[in-house]
Length: 243
Length: 204
Image (tube, rainbow over all chains, first blue to last red; front, side):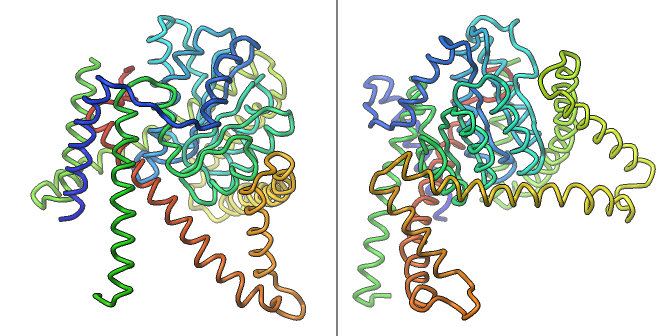
């Protein structure tokens, strides 16, 4: 009974807050990784280099799909902004279903920018179907395709360390986020700008002015406070031996 | 067409979600998930075609290191033909392709990863010499000291007291906090897709 109640409450709040955000846009706190990402978007076009967006190997058929969808939302914005560049962005993924959506999202970005005919299908790549084979393929792109910034956003395990190491060897900055605890620890140690925890899901709100993205951050904040209050209340009740 | 794809995606999403809460919708949910699994299998083939297409392009344009692309395509073809002729569960094929090539290569990458991570930890303080960077390094060092198996046994105090205290209280608490944040992010991202606010399909 709790699960459907949470779901309905979240859906209701998301709808209401989206409508509210359309009237009064919110102010978001500064996150250095997103500031670097915005800067990298502009610089990549000026430098004649490309961005490499690595979406991880999260399957869309399980719980890891959330991070994959967050990565796709970011990819959509990046594709639209960099499609007119001489060196358009390239995206890699380690899951075939995600790979298909990567291509679709890239194509949609090109079409939104009015250069649909410039899209080439090899801009979205499935580099391997196991974590390490995927990392090996992504390493090659990170090192050999005139990349200005590597953006790792999605489901990554410790193998993310191989991609960041390859990127570091040629002094290319990395912005990294994973929904996996081991992947986050590796990215924290090896990426110039790591994103921690739920910051992964904020990418759309920071790069895209769509109110639904900002609304989803507010819904997360509301639920986070409710969870904090429930944890404190539960601890207090346990302390006084109510249960 | 865009509207149709959105309607299909949202309807399927809602029906699968209802299957978790209403027993009447469970059968339909199972059917839709079966279809999704079949489609996912088909996309694996598309993924392989994508891989071949990318590497064929590299060979055709004589890109840097295209020799590796040629090796990849040859390996793919040889494995595919051997799998067709001998059947995938053939023990000789398994021992050559799986135990002889794939597992050793992945193990090598795992070994490389250990070196990369050690190097990243060393460089962390040079890159980010702030409080959290120092806490990260000290925590990692404490856990390593507590986990190390030395000839004379565990390191006293570190293995019995400090490591369990750091990993079971501080690290576990932090990890749970992060996972709760990730779960909330997944929930709202899923709802955005379900409402059609995010449509990473159908060229939207």
